[in-house]
Structure formats: C-alpha cells, structure tokens
Length: 95
Image (cartoon, rainbow, N blue to C red; front, top):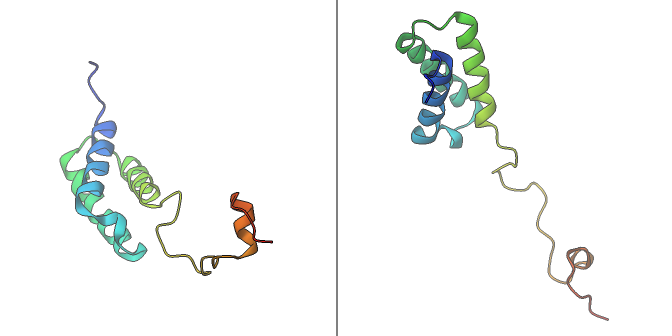
C-alpha cells in the first residue's frame, strides 16, 4: 500500500470528523464555524500543509456537508390521495 500524502490523510480525517460530530445536521453558519476550527486543528496536526491546502480542505469539507438531495422538509405539501399527480406515479385513476 502506498503511503498517503498529508493532504489525503487530512481530508480523510476531516470526513471522519464530519461523520462523527453530526455537523451534517447543523445550520450553515454553525457548519462554517465548526469547519474553520476543525481545519485549523488539522493544520496543526499536519504542519506540512500550506495555507492554500487548508483553504482547499475547508472548501472540500463544506461541499461534503451540502447534500445532493436536501434533507429539509418540502416547502409545498405532498399531493393528496386522489390527486391527478397520482397518475404520474403509475397509480390507477378513478373513473
């Protein structure tokens, strides 16, 4: 197995911290504060990382916290039973 570069190790450690700390469920402002503090900590753990590496690490971490599919509740209500949209889902319509 090849030896990982410091940036790769720091990124993997950041993702591990994200999963363990529950930051995925925090609001965006809290995520930003948490990410700044965690990246600062990782900068101390991996002194070979340049400031540009730490900026990149924070950006990757913040992107990782943004879900592809939102976990937030829908803004519009779900369709009611018997609604015309049911036919789009393959369910039979009543005559």
